[in-house]
Image (cartoon, rainbow, N blue to C red; front, side, top):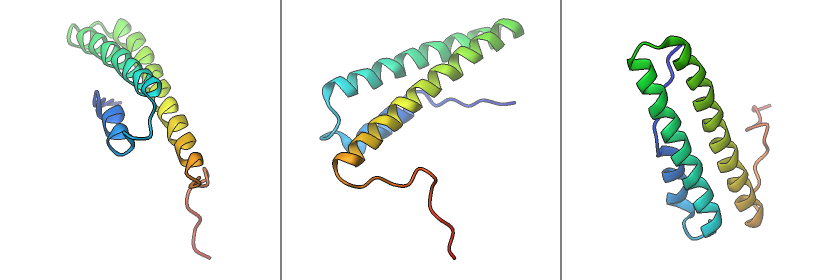
Length: 98
């Protein structure tokens, strides 16, 4: 299994289109979660390079949990923003043509 993490991509790309809409508190929260993810990813890379497999696997679980938390918070913020502007998509995704 190969895991590729692009630090900063999610929070940066998320803010690009919504700078005027995202509150300073929301932006700060996303930045903090991104910084935590970056640090956990850095720790994983160090353990992986040192061939400490068990420790790296444990750190990978922490890193993935941080990534999931950042994604969940970003999705929540995006959904709140869309609700505010009356454009809430169906969470089931686009429907198939009949």
